[in-house]
Image 1 (cartoon, helix red, strand yellow):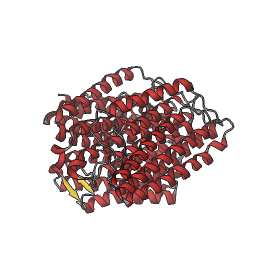
Image 2 (image 1 turned 45 degrees about the vertical axis):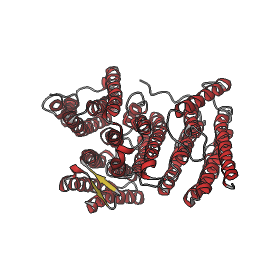
Image 3 (image 1 turned 30 degrees about the horizontal axis):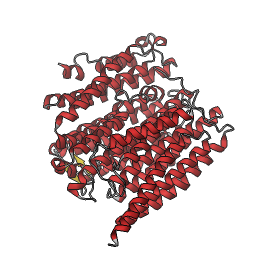
Image 4 (image 1 turned 180 degrees about the vertical axis):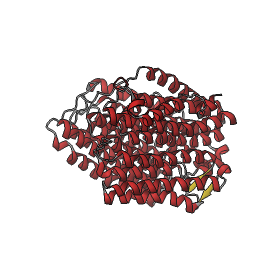
Length: 395
Length: 223
């Protein structure tokens, strides 16, 4: 398993280095696409060939994989792979509006690396570093169209995201402190270590720590009321980056919440964690649905839809039980696929019609039949129409 | 009999550093000039490094002592100078527009500190050398940092607010988890550097576009 994990992480790192060295040339794009598809293949091998359901350490507890990390790993690896492929075309002259072309591929691959590392890192401190890396890298990608709006969106994103993650780190520190009486002053805060010691952790500290984690990492998930950055960043970034943010980043941040939620559940029982997830999930679902109704910018509409879907996943985990959890995790996968397709379609519409306003887009089926059909399918998929995955989940 | 005076001196020094760190956080709310805010952050970081050093010496922990030196180097010298050079000198105006004026800011800051101490008193935890509640001062800095970011409409001020918040988290780490592996503490500190570089890039872009570091006009995206 360790070899495949290393291959999975080494490919985007190498592609990032190559992208930084080569810059804006077609070969950078193709190298990135090959690396991303290779990483996806390695992720599949890691997840399916090693039966991760019961949880496994690898490389002396540097990595940890179980069913939860497997689901999120597949989601982020898939989105990274298809976004890299789509970006090759999107960056052709006259198609996308990316101005920060020199660093696009290096940043995209670093973003992919951080996203792939998040679900497999065993150490909670390093997991935080991986999520923080996604912020600094993707914030620059959000501004890569170079408009005033994208700069505003990127600034909001980096400030709110970083502030949220600082609170998330405080949560990890408090959970670490909860283990000190049992595990001693110096211990490595891996999931396995804390999970084994969970019954002996200080309950009050674990509750406080998880609350900080939920608010902190929840900011990156886009849970209401910490979602202010999300509609701006998703709507103003280039479409492949919007897809990566929506399909992969939100999932990776949610993974961090659920991973620490698993420790909290073992320490203080499921009720506390479930109630918090239910409250934030319901709030996100309802408010995002209301905001969706008043959107005229179709990328912004998709962004609010992402908040809504993260709310649904949080609700599913909050309800508890194996069926609800299965539904929630399957939802992560179908949302990643459906929303990525929707943002790809949105990218094509922005290129063709030079507007993000839904009112300015007419006759897509005639002008671009393939794009029109794909956008329609994506819209049907993410709204839960049969036979798509979200319908299967709700029935 | 020799241990008691040492114990008292170290604890008293830690308490004084904690008070000074809190006061430096509140001082941020008093100053309107951008470069004064950056200096207030540097002073606050001196106390963060000083507290880390004190805990390191008391526990005879070389990792914490190295971390204290790194903290001083990065937060007291490198980051303030980098921010100053990157942006402050590029713009003509240096006074930050305030959403909440200074007297009310101070009042809210003191209230937030009280709230932090009250909340922290509910947590059954003892901090390294700090008087109980151990998380009171770090949480105060976190809340003051948040408040500062929200009410100062300037990119540099928001960076300073964010760094203040981060100082609060750093002090919480040293106070309640001083044994957290050195590698992680070091990683977190290293992580701060690229983050500040990225903030600097953003701040420069904004300043270059508008010839100001004010973000009053950055309110196009709504709803």
